[in-house]
Image 1 (cartoon, rainbow, N blue to C red):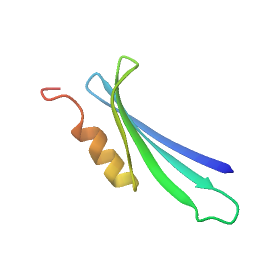
Image 2 (image 1 turned 180 degrees about the vertical axis):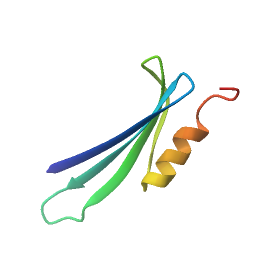
Image 3 (image 1 turned 45 degrees about the vertical axis):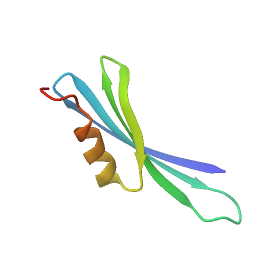
Image 4 (image 1 turned 120 degrees about the vertical axis):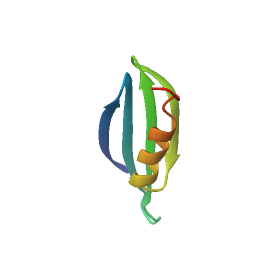
Length: 69
């Protein structure tokens, strides 16, 4: 199994947002690609999830930043 990881990060106020691409390939099977997203506050993950594409992962990360920040 081969993994390819690509990660993008940005800051929004005191929060760190990231989206990480994971592509998994197994012999004789279809490729599987997903994007994991997370929101961290001073190094602690406060929200995370997975999406099928980069744009959705970025939108979900932004949407999960606490209100008022």
